[in-house]
Amino acid sequence: LTGAAVTLDTPGGPKVVPAELVPGPSVGFAYEAKLAGLEPGTNYTVHVQDRAFAFRTPPATPAAFTFAALGDMGVEAPAPASVKAIQDAGADLVLISGDISYAGGDPTVWKQWFALVEPSAATIPWMTALGNHEADVEGAQEPILSTNVVDPTEQAFYKQRFGLPGNELWYSFDWAGAHFVALDTFSGAIRLAESLDVRLAAEEILIALERTRIVRLPG
Image 1 (cartoon, helix red, strand yellow):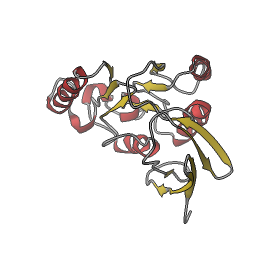
Image 2: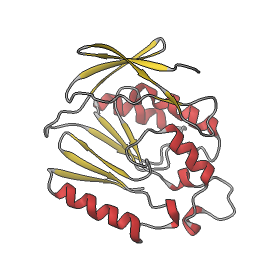
Image 3: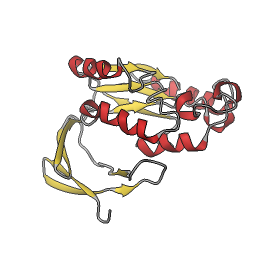
Image 4: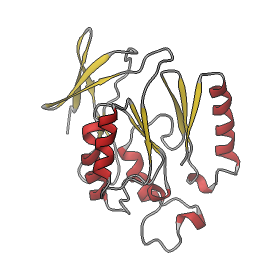
């Protein structure tokens, strides 16, 4: 789709934001529009074709907020009930600790999962971590938990669908005075007890200790 874009309603008027094609094994096409320069504690509306989604950015200073944390979600019951509970709780943020859709290499399941969470995920951030079901595919000869070798196709599904900070596999972010850390214990054939994620975790924890709270989102 040439010239793909979304329109962002800002306090200063509408702004057209280009959307870039994200390569990967998805069903159909995936586009990503980066909404940069947002002001803290501000209401925005983004228009995607003929649909509009409203959201609010977090405040710049520490403040009370509500977040939901879950994992092993999938698309079967009780997944729809989980989405409703998140909406009923008025959550500002959702953390998923991995094993998100249980797609098992089937991109149509990812499509089903996103349709399931859209009523919430279109208006508040859903921040994810890589689980073994996003690193391996069902039916593999050697389970990921014994070999710790990432299946490149399944990881490509994951990276194509989520626009996360940094390299998207391990990252951190701030929200209203809290510092969140997402770790990846699968990529690069290393485990948490080995070098890379340990160094990352140590650096992030030192940063977080200077702030008000820390929440670890394990992979």
